[in-house]
Image (cartoon, rainbow, N blue to C red):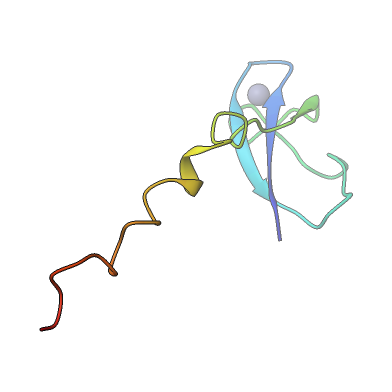
Length: 68
Ligand SMILES: [Zn+2]
């Protein structure tokens, strides 16, 4: 299940909720002030990691001078 981030429009508190895909803020309340004015935040955790995962694997393990 994905984790969604919500922000309280009343007090500005941000928190994460484990929810099923496609669920909205219905039934959720701010854990800090108890108000239902929640705004879904679209997480941007993957925005900066475009290329870094591809590097550093080509030269590992099969260089010269291993077993002889
Ligand atoms: Zn709040």
